[in-house]
Length: 311
Image (cartoon, rainbow, N blue to C red):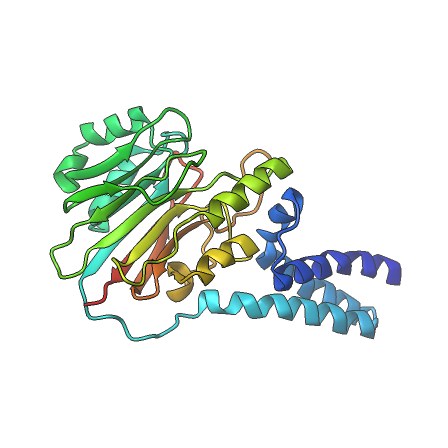
C-alpha cells in the first residue's frame, strides 16, 4: 500500500518542483503544468488518503506539496484591492474565433452588452470579418487594424475610436496585429493582439512557443501604456509566461480575482479546462474588473476587461 501511495504522490511532487522552480521542461511537462490547479486539488486527495491509511510521512509530504501549489494559486481568486488610476476607462474584449467559426451573433451580442470599446480577435478569417461586417460591426466599432487570413493565422483589432496600426513583434507563426488606440483623454494606449504558437505535440513546438513568448514586447515606461490581449497558449503556471509578466505586466484576471476562470478546453482528446487567454496590462494601468464569457462556435471563451488608465 505504501508503494501505491508513493506512486500517487510522485506526480504532485513533480509538478511542485517544476512550478516552483520555474521550469517548463519539454512539451509534455508544459502540457502538465497547465493543469497545476488540478494537481493541487489532487494532492489534497492523496494526502487525505495517506492520512486515512496512517502513512504519516507521506501525508505530510503530500500536504506540503499540495499547499505549496495552493500558495501560487491563491492570488488568482483574491482581488488585489489596489487604488485605481484616475484616468479614462477602456472596455476591452478579446476572443479566439476558432478558425473563424465563432458565432457572429454571439460575438455581436457580447460587444453590445459589454459596451466594448476595443475588440481584439485571433483566428480572424476573411469569412468571419465579412460576417461581422454584415452584422453591422462597423456601426459599433468603426475603426480597425486587421490582417484577416484563412485558417488560424488571422488577427485584428476593432475599436470605437481611431486606430493607427504599428508593429510590436517580429516574425511569428500567427499574425499579431498591434495598434495605437487614439482615446479622447490625455493618455492613448498600445494594444497587441497576441496569438502564440501552441507548445504541445513536439519539442520543436515548445521551443517556438518559448521563443514567441520571450519576443513579446515589454512595457515602454517612457511611452504609452501597453496592453497585450489574446491567446497566449500559456497559463500563469508556465515559467515562460511568468517571464513575460516579470518584464512589467500584470495579468488582468489575477488582479481582479478572476485568474482561475478557464478559457479553453481540449476537445480532441477531451481535456480539463485551463486558462490560456489573458489580458496583460502595463503596471501603470488599473483593472476595474474581468469577466469570462462563452462564445458559441469557439473552443475559447472571451475575456472582457475594464481598464483604468493613468492620467
